[in-house]
Image (cartoon, rainbow, N blue to C red; front, side, top):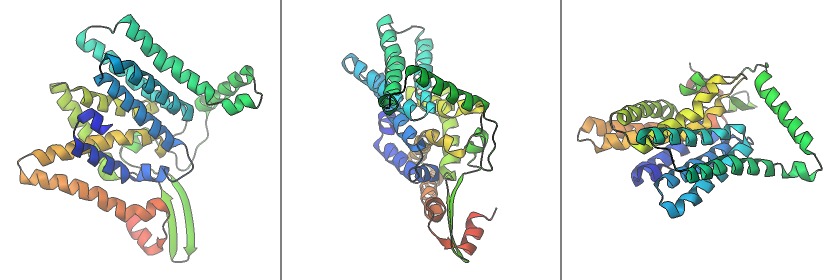
Length: 311
């Protein structure tokens, strides 16, 4: 996705590196929860959309259809996969406003089919086992009424619940596991994000927005708007939320941080080059130090208390 948006190989490699050493994505990829699959399908949906934007007429329809297919797979995994379609729609609105011209009726029709009918069909097909067991359409509708009621009326609380504003500042990770090997040895799994990526990426996103306002560059706008779509809607959720709901937004932070590092490295000032190198080293060092904290690797209780629980 980073390579498709920026066309800069070094930037794309850095973005991949940052995603690989982020604690939230790392922990989620090693546990039996479906949030990491949502991230996977959302990234492919965004990639297909980005390819669609830059493609010629012959390939336009193919990438449009693929963006709808991957959005449907994301929605079939978790309803938050709808954020992809929101990102598509938001970008189309801005593109139309920018040139004061709507797409042709034919293209609008294709978009409606690709981003509503195709995901809906895939969503229904994802219940194949449900249908093969003999359930009826009425039961399907009743099930979704219950799901919606649960999502909008849940009043339960949890000791590790958090708010979207806490996610931004890398606060309140979920404690997944603890293993007391002996009196002096313990293994823990938390899904804490890499603070260099979380905070540095957020800062770079705002720089990208500022640059985009001054001189509009489509990929910069799309990166920022995609991040907002993956995060901001959670601000209005009526139910309790957890840190892992922020996972789909993390790749956008990684791409933004990679852009910032490459931009600093290209400057002629030695101090800024050193800063860019320190950012990369910081992400790697954090991951090495916190690897036991993310993976359940047993360490001495004294070490855990001094390094992981000192605050």
